[in-house]
Amino acid sequence: MAALAVCIAGAANALTVTFDNNFPNDPQSGLTTFQGTSQGFTFDYAAVYNFGNQINFHDDNGVLSTVVQAVNGSKFTAQSVDLSGLSRVYKTGSGPAPALGTQAYNQWLMAGTAAVPTLTFSGLLNGATVATQTFGPSALNTFGFSSGFTAIDQLLITLNIPNAVKFPFGLGPNTVWCDQWCGEFNVDNLQVAPVPLPASGLLLIGAVLGLFGYRRLKTT
Image (cartoon, rainbow, N blue to C red; front, side):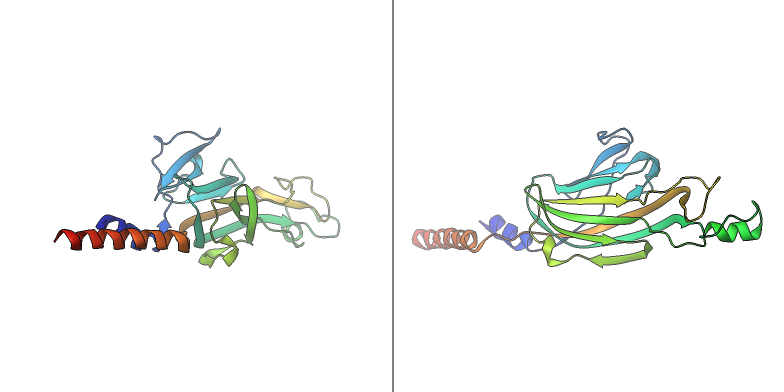
């Protein structure tokens, strides 16, 4: 019974999923991805961008999407995440291209305003989306999730890349292009909290603990 009480108290405590992996011993989940397990949660990561304990989302053979979920299938609340992102998406100017190799040409290559890569977090419950939040490129920072991410059973993370030409050769006006690759995001330190028991469950546990205490009194 003491252990049960400890479990009840611990259920209210948040934990941090640090995305530790055990490459190359983790099972392969795709052509270039492996499934890691960290703090009781599973996730996919790419071997080519295995820079440590984080998930690297990258449009060049990196992770494009992954589902984070508890190994035991239990519900959880996503509270915050550490996130950084980088864009290499550009857009040419509206006028004709200057002479190749000139300073004017290099300025024209990036004269337009292009859409940037983004990373979308979707909270799922029984396969249905109940909440979404999308983040753009930024320096490393901690971002909080809305209350819609309460009591979900899966967290889907998706990299969104604009439609773009991969190499800046033979480009025309108003053309979106990427400098070899388009973007990447690093995800780390996902703060989650277990979903507490409903009131009926707490009452039942309280009754069990009370009955146990009553029986101890009778036997003494």
